[in-house]
Length: 226
Image 1 (tube, rainbow, N blue to C red):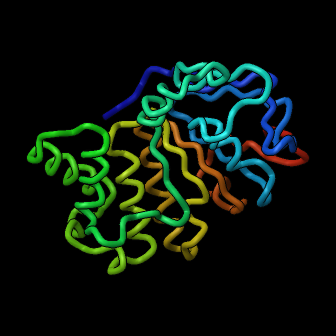
Image 2 (cartoon, rainbow, N blue to C red; image 1 turned 90 degrees about the vertical axis):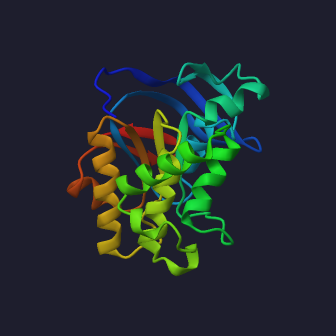
């Protein structure tokens, strides 16, 4: 699928984020368009993951205005959260695959959970998505028989299943060696080149040099852009 028309997907104005009354981020002004590759750069505890968690309503917005994929996050009702989250694909550092199910079953589980019914259509869709990430020949492998890089490819496939508007990748190369990390970066950048928005948190300052994108730097509870 190709996305061509640019749209503003995220608009934060004077946003403040708190956890247990501690200010995590303040005065956040941010606009992200469709098709962008955006890096969140900063130390552990600098607020990168907290910002991502506001996107899918795990952490509330304390102050300011926050628009995300057409939703006003400051007025979001609990009943709306599942629909918001279906527009997002999340790639975790620690994979979070179901250990007792093979690759295909892991992906089929997500489709079942999000309302798909026709098993033949589901199986064909899973096969197509696995082909996109180079894992079409690993459908029946259990997660523990896969390398870290292969597991992360399956996680990316899982994130793509329901054609999300944004991919959120939280330290996706953090548990991988450099060469395997490069392969995952190539895959994520390829997804972005097709028009998908990718927002990725990382400690690795080399990735933006090799794979260009916007750089949002987190320090002293603020976000700056270079």
